[in-house]
Image (cartoon, rainbow, N blue to C red):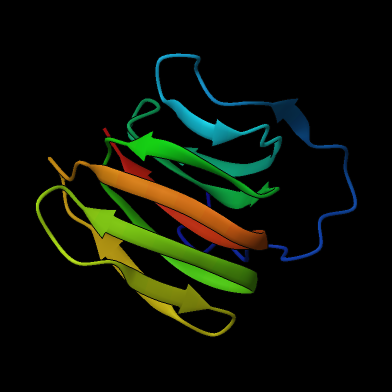
Length: 114
């Protein structure tokens, strides 16, 4: 098994399509596409590409993200909004709670650890 994995930013396989959990939806009608590309440590580490259409949801997980396209605004609970756009990278540390607002359809590379 190789310990090196290239993440395809424009995957050639069909994504899993979904939407936000009803209890996390704040506004809009966002749809999600997920191209899961790797899992490790018995499913606790996951990487791939994720895309979302405009909308606003509660975000409650730790994640490393690199924005490939689009614009999002993240507002940590009790904090000020921060805008991220194509080329930006950020970390939502474990325990992060806040609002994820997709302003323009966003595509990102993600890495989650659970």
